[in-house]
Length: 111
Image (cartoon, rainbow, N blue to C red; front, side, top):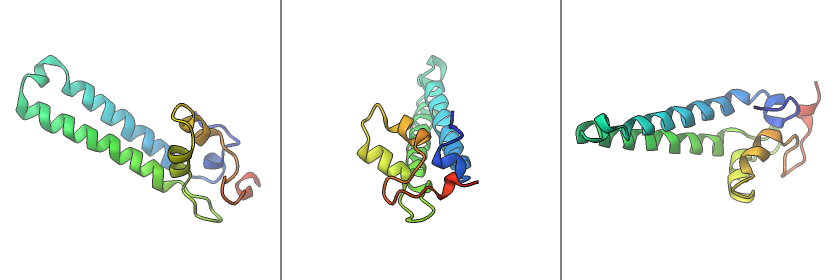
């Protein structure tokens, strides 16, 4: 999913991205389970599962917004992606960008 030339990959921050993916997938799966008929018919299961999974997904989004940073200027790539890129392009931009959009840092490109 991450390209070899991406800033995230080359700056060794890919584990932060994968933690986001796990949180998103885990929260999404828990949300789907919450809406299955046997679970959704029991409020003592449905409410905690749906609220918990929603918090898990939101936590993952918060994580991606604050965790991946430029090594030089410390700007948050996830926050820039979510805030300044179009809603249908932020994710693709995040996983493919190779320089910091704030300071132009390319140190991560040097091996």
